[in-house]
Length: 284
Ligand code: AMP
Ligand code: MN
Ligand code: MN
Ligand code: MN
Image 1 (cartoon, rainbow, N blue to C red):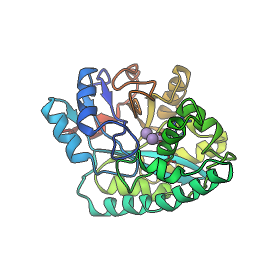
Image 2 (tube, protein in one colour):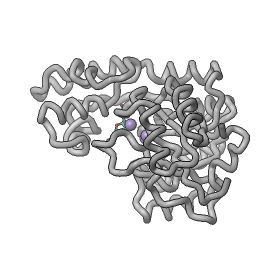
Image 3 (spheres, rainbow, N blue to C red):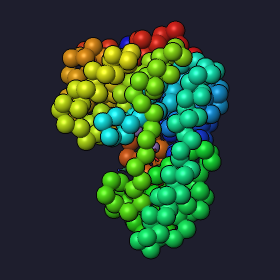
Image 4 (cartoon, rainbow, N blue to C red):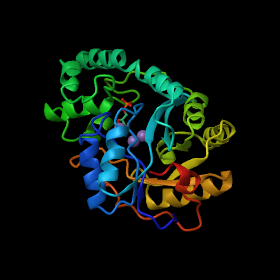
């Protein structure tokens, strides 16, 4: 498989904070020309069997996937895992531990929103949750849009739920060493998700990439729905500098909310090593 492949290795289903089922995502990926697909729900692998079966039914290549929430240098960083054994017990336990704080955090978020007059946000967000173990800020955002507090989810994240704004609750996720270790020891490849999204200084970003590599991380998202064309160029250079393989993924969540659809991004630049070259024996 070459760089010139319509691979989409980042998206979300109702098992985390997407609005489509794994089967609906597989159909949509296929219709958009995706040749290699991965479902990467936040801190969850509960949709993997369904996604793999749906991919097979569409004659589309599949890699197992997840997106692990990590706290690094006081920021939340996302680490995508690809091609791991979905039956690996240590990884399942690690992800369960990472999910476990979400419900209390959600109750605290609702209490903070109540202080600015927004009531019933916990129950409201729960109405959008497909997986009770995975209540996320996205579900709160949908509630705030539905009730007319904001016009869309990007307005929600400008005015609420982010640092310094009502509804923001700091949270301690997995460590970088844990996330990379779970994925790697389960036979997968760890990938830094959407690096341009983090508010790091140059020194902090260098520390992230260096420590990620030292823990065994091998990839970075270069072409993603979260990057501009210039950011893709920049992180392509970072990939080469750190000797990391490059990944490509839309980060698609919902037909109504996501500006980048499955399989519609530019292809990876030809001079980069695509992450799927490291995973040839894991592709189903
Ligand atoms: P959580 O894991 O509960 O902290 O929620 C994180 C999720 O919120 C991300 O995966 C996105 O789906 C969503 N999100 C975060 N920031 C934004 C933003 N600025 N615009 C839209 N969605 C966002
Ligand atoms: Mn999300
Ligand atoms: Mn992410
Ligand atoms: Mn994502």
